[in-house]
Image (tube, rainbow over all chains, first blue to last red):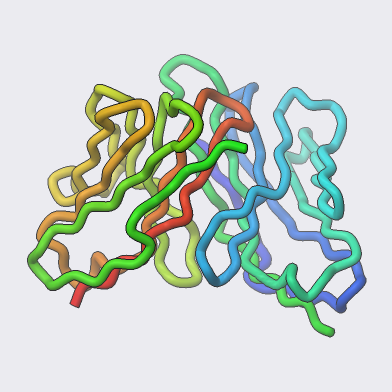
Length: 118
Length: 115
């Protein structure tokens, strides 16, 4: 069975500094995708970054980068130059890939609440 | 970009009544839609997966007779919470997909309060 683990319930970071949010996963599939989402208090799920299991380069999207360590089954999110607007809940998620019986469902970790201090 | 619209954003209903939440893909056809439930400060829990024209696949522990999911077209899926009770109060959010990989898009979510 697939599993996603985020071990940091809450994190603080000083404005303009970088922060790393941890995520480990477990799957027996060879094909899968890893996502990070930001969820502000409004509830919407804001897509940040995606890494496919076969992608050799770490994904980057602006201030977001994903530190993908396949052998360790980790997919940490790095936010550089934190801003006050980055304060939110962050979810790591894993999507099963194309395979027999797979529906492509997305499962989520427990989430990390990030607070950026001025 | 791909847009998924969810309606209503907020709904308050009386205990014992049913409430329907719609999830529409506005500019693409979704082969699969997913429904999630989220309690405050907790993670999103997958409730069910639905494909157009077929019965939804429910996750273990989700009552299919209570949470009715209909996926009548490639652009619309509905979740009906039947005989709602206060413990059904939660945030419900849908996502729609056009395939595998990075092809999944979320609606804005619906806050349900049962009084």
